[in-house]
Length: 97
Image 1 (cartoon, helix red, strand yellow):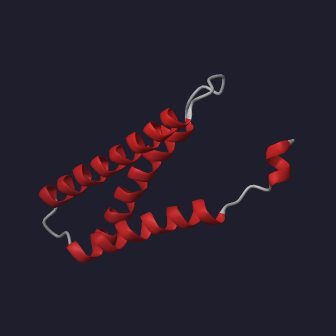
Image 2: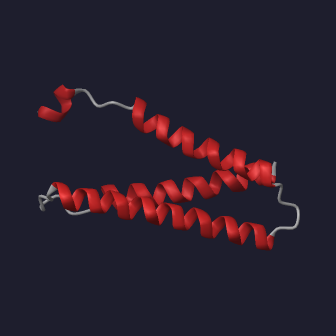
């Protein structure tokens, strides 16, 4: 069970970093499409680096870590975060007002 929670926390940390990287910025600046895409790529690469680094740390420090549990927890947290972003739609009326 520890492995599943470790995988889920690794995934949540990576997704949290990517969300912070994409959404936290001054609202006064208007960014072009190219810079928006660069921000998204930077966030995704950072997320993958954080996930890889934390997986390496957990594997090196834990003796009782089960690989299948870690992968299940990691994939579950990544799928849930992706589904929540897909299914959480803001009504167009709230955006245009």
